[in-house]
Image (tube, rainbow, N blue to C red; front, side):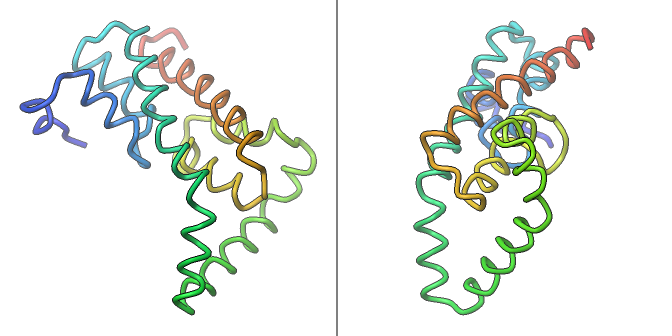
Length: 158
């Protein structure tokens, strides 16, 4: 993605923060951008990216239940969609979550691959009924690990 248009109006740190909040890039895109393009100190890039990546987690974990319930009540399509999504996700991943418990959520968020990360982990926590008080620290741990992995790969350490 080209974020150069943001650079005209925002500091490199602000761009890094915003990129880390986005569901597609998260810190997997923000850390290489900060270090490789903006030449931000790796520790500072890590900290900005982790904090930025966690901001949407708060909102997703606190609001996804209300949003899905409201949409399901108002629109039959969403009721069917959420029903299918939750059932499909539970069937496909229930064994892993049963076997590994909390570590499954941490690992799911920590592995820096497409379709994993804090956004997906937040949705998974909702689907599997993991309460906020338990899911937030687990997702945070996964984000910290993912940030270390991405930083290591960006710096050529890993």
